[in-house]
Structures are given as structure tokens and as C-alpha cells.
Length: 150
Image 1 (cartoon, rainbow, N blue to C red):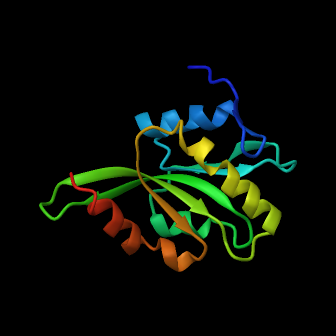
Image 2 (cartoon, rainbow, N blue to C red):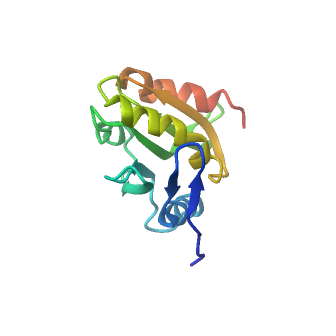
């Protein structure tokens, strides 16, 4: 496997743990035990971004149910959908989850760290920022990914 050095996020002083990029590459490439989503979080000491959980469950509602109600998260979801012409497509969706009930310090560190985390994740089709579950329903995400063309 490829080694990824830690990435220091200058705006917040947070580093991206190399395992985050390794797991992301596995999601992007896919295999028989395909990971469908990765949830990422700040470590307990707020010093690094680590993998919170991964899953091969492709049910979007189950993914949304895994988002904590009072803590921010980042996630990458391999969104599979049917096009109007019947063709099947997949798009990588980057989710920035920051519920209103989150602690203000956590929201600030997550916001300051977002771009530096997002930058090395090549292949992302769309980004969605949400503060409420109603902003990330299957229908909303489907509309956004299908409006991207091809």
C-alpha cells in the first residue's frame, strides 16, 4: 500500500492522519469489499483528523443516521444513482456536517480545517454543507449529483 505523510493544516494547526487518505483511495478505487462511505472527525485532543468509521452499506438513509446529532463530521459518500436514460453512475460526495447544536469551538476548528482536508481528496464531484438532516436527504443529493452532467 502507498504511504501517505501527515498533512499539517496551517489555518487550524490540525493534521490529517495518513490513514484518512489511504482509506479514501480505497473507497475511490473500490474492490469486492467496497467501502461506500468514510466518516472523518477530529481526534479527542482536536489536533488531528482521523477516520471515525467506514461502511460498505450503500443505503443512504443508514449513512445519514450515523451522523451524530451534536458533533460535526466530514464524510465522503460514493453515491450511486440511475440517470434518466437508464445508465448507472457513481459520484463522490464530500459532506461537511456541522449541526447547530455542536459546540462552537468544534464548529470553528472543523470549518478552519475543511479546505485543507478537502484539497487532497481528488475525484470529489460535489460538496454539500449541512447543519440539519433535512439538507441531506437522498432526493437533495440525487438532484445535485445528477445536475452535474454525465
